[in-house]
Image (cartoon, rainbow, N blue to C red):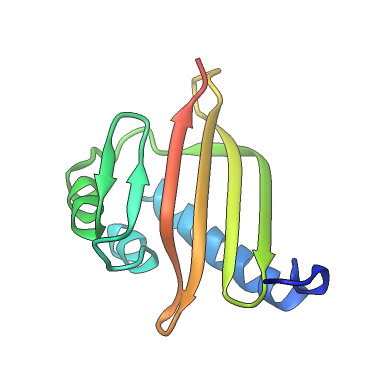
Length: 128
């Protein structure tokens, strides 16, 4: 269990914020190679989207390859990243797509794997 001094250690927080920024850039530019790289390559990985439930890396990868690359730009309006120890973090944002007043929400659980930080669980939703 993490002690209070292990939560949001500056070095770990900087790492997670950097990888999260790389993910966000890849998302809005539809860089599928980087998006795939940042998700854990496991059948245990999941992503709940605004209109889909994806179980396993293969399903997430297939979704990304088939998704239209239009209207991906968004503005992050709130962001909270919390790290626990040196190997686990959660990242939550609120966002708005260009031309829309709807508020989107995204949550990700990141875990440090031997190959680097990877998303093991993600959830995207839109408020009504």
